[in-house]
Length: 554
Image 1 (spheres, one colour):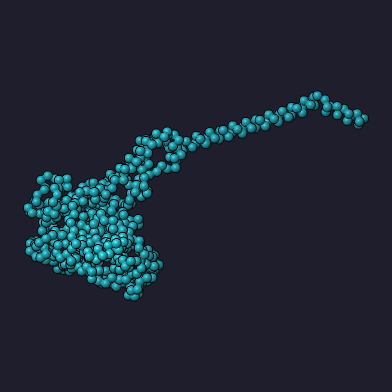
Image 2 (cartoon, rainbow, N blue to C red; image 1 turned 90 degrees about the vertical axis):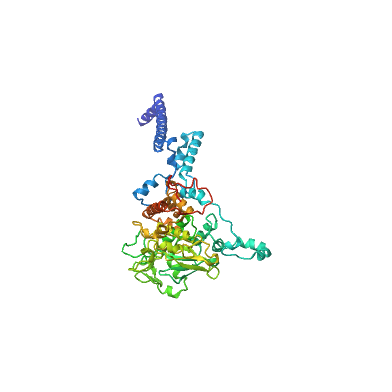
């Protein structure tokens, strides 16, 4: 019975119906695999399509009318502007100098450039470069291109140079040696050799930039306290026998002098020395030695290398952990008024030293408009309105350019509110036919909220001013050459501008206000007197003189 059952099963498996079921199972599996493959393919296509749609939505469409978006809107100096200065600066195109050249397309723009053809992209770049050309216009560069800053220079004779290395005969004997050495002179020596009878330096001379770079970067070999003066100053030594005068940061740049303090009781400011050098250059005087800001390490660049034992004994660490020192001087050299790093970094101004007095003696002159430096007494010029008549009869103010040189210095001091001008110096070699050195400007830029008209006493009492000085002042009062704008741009070149603006916007606005006051005083003089301008220009001033018609009296 069992055997029959097995036989029947075997026959059933071999029957045609069984073969059909096996064939159908294989076909079903093939269909299922095909459907699964098709479904996977459709899903991949759908995902690729969605990704493309989302990507195109993230890329902003580029329009030819919005080319300015490719120009980086950066400023050289970040500052909080007052309402008046902000209005003027807002009209200026943004500068792109900080971004290291011409602006480039962003990564998104590069990814989306497939939506343009090649011609459209070239057109876009051309429009971008045109916009960049407008935005990089420099008021400072335009100012120095003006004819008033490129006047013919007087020919210099051998005795018009302060220093000479060798006589003509010696130079002929070693001509090749001199040529080789002249190319290897350190910047400080080249600066000394460039001093002439009429100015400390030529603005166009590349040695000026080399000298400021030298001061800002050279390794400091030694530090000692400089003798003389009322406040703390250090003398730094560099390789190749170079030296610089250091004035440290004593207070914040925005700190304004207390109105209750006398002019001789204030701190000196390192940023005032730097700003004075730039302002003097903008006025076309070139009578202040190059000054640059620098961030130094109080510990490694002063304390650890100084051989001045009196100075080294004044170093200490403050409760806040800052390294401080106070040195020895007449004012503000005590533990109550120390100079401190943060904890080691200290902002300072470094001024180029003039030639040694043994090589180039200087004469110190007492200013006729010197203040009394007394809390109770007035100077003679403050009590006599006709004081200038006496000065005009006194040598060396009775001939030459000494009087108008002094008035140039008074204009500079008034613009930066410097009341501490008791003496000035000249190089003895040139006698009375030379310029005045505008040294020691640390007490400038103390107040911005008020002006000191008495600083202009030489101008208001004498009613005399150089023609070239007046024309430059008028030029700097125009919107395209506004004094505050060009000084801001000039100061932005100093290394310390990377830390913070060297002058606040309130000080810059004060410069424009004071410049207008100087021009009003000159106008008042011209209305009262006939002989106001000392004509030092041989050229026609058409195109230079922007004073309204009717105001060009002499």
